[in-house]
Image 1 (spheres, rainbow, N blue to C red):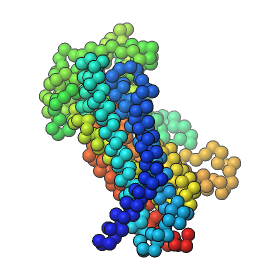
Image 2: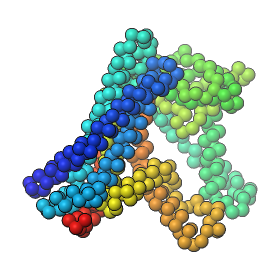
Image 3: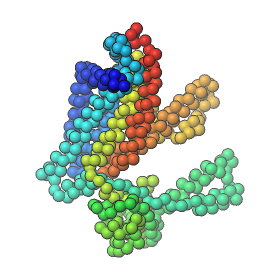
Length: 460
């Protein structure tokens, strides 16, 4: 065991030294610094301090992480294949070193380099946010907006789901009893269409009507900082119409008895500060009610999409949230490194690079694929041969499987949450660790170690 650990450490150290000797680390570091300092200088946003901070956290973090991912995938593809082709691997083969020790050592070495560069990204971005807050050109309102919307991390709560089963069953039954079910259309498809209609109807608040959303608060939630209601609302005429109404908050909608009047035109994302006391007195539940004014002063208000309204409660600070987000990114990089390493044990360096980047692109493009990717079919399916149809079906199935496997981690969106001031939960980090940091590298590592154990490295 001690010998295996020593060999593992030596392989990891040799991997790091090889990357430094090839100047890949230096080139990648230079590229990351260009992104970290160049993007904020080129992208100005709308000119506000909050926009500058969000550019630092969105464009800069995303581009630098993307560049780091490409560097990790490229390095891992060369880690084994290039050394075998250059015959440096013969020195390792005569030790002897087991296949799993070689694969795991190289993976740990690449992950060490990625962790150092990722930590550098986090330090530079955090330092630039701190310098932005000290900019003498900013007034106190600008600083407060950055603190409240980015540096004070919020937990986003969706409203309690409404039970539409009874209304849905009634409408579907009426369609079936009338015999108006179109030929070739299954009742399940009709039910899905009716569900969309019911949800769209409930998303609208007509003039003179009131809509109430109920939020279940997590245990221990309190008004420990500014709480916000974030919503996306437009009129029934889209951007040309005007909506006027009043918001009220609290357990019994009495915490803000005077109400908070609003007038909107367009469909931008809006945020409203919830008065103090509306959350603390909620006793585990808080309600938000919008009362639309009478016509013709106001049109029908429409709350768009599944994220049309959410409650944002303060629950932490920026630094720990950034650390959790970068951990999720590091685990994702671990999967990329495992993919490249395993491809490099199977193929030559050019083929391994092509295959690894192809699989990574397929995963990125298929994350939104349906759970049953082959159910849709093709309109041109009859024109293809049986072999072509089988190949297309196999490709769709593979893309759907890859997308389904990546979806639990992809939905976390750690960098997007940091830029929006939304909390990256410990459970999200645990999911990323279990899947991207352990499960997927473990499966790929087993395949790579098996291949290395049967490959004649010394004769290469």
